[in-house]
Image (cartoon, rainbow, N blue to C red; front, side, top):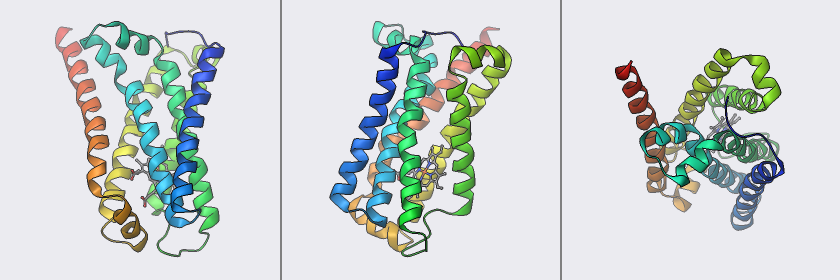
Length: 217
Ligand code: HEM
């Protein structure tokens, strides 16, 4: 709950995260066309951009407990802003989901997403919304420290799981469906590895720091 107070610079940073991801998406659509394949590529790009902000927000407290330097401290103090910037960037993913469903109302190459991904991811967006709302002083005070901690700890693990699940899903699907095969030609599976490595390193770091704290008490 602690951290810095919101000011125009932080709102600017959050808007910049949104605009950067949006620009990457538009560039992707420019390259691949406004169609099912182009929108799926834009979805992939948007998820990958937002993952970087997510990992910083997810792991910065643990990293700061391990390494003390000015750079890490800067992000640690502003971790709430990084979290909201992640949400703003990930709103672009939501925008492309809507665009994909509008563009492909009937199944052409393949259904846009399996049902469980729609439900799991949909809940993910609700969790992100709740976390953003409670990142502001008023709502966070109203919620209370214990409930705030519960929401932000469990919520961040849930979003982590959705990222891993969606990567695994897209990775496995690349060899199976027509749309994914078309994308796999443009986008080999090896591109997944750095992002998966990033997600698991962040998780291991959090587990290690939590275990260390438990051992100390
Ligand atoms: C918190 C919520 C969500 C997260 C964290 C998330 C994350 C991801 C990730 C990591 C990918 C794979 C990116 C890649 O291959 O590089 C992805 C792709 C995708 N997501 Fe999401 N997603 C979320 C919600 C949703 C929802 C609700 C839907 C659909 C209703 C959806 C539809 C898609 C689609 C269609 C793709 C492209 C799949 C493909 O490559 O064939 N996502 N998402």
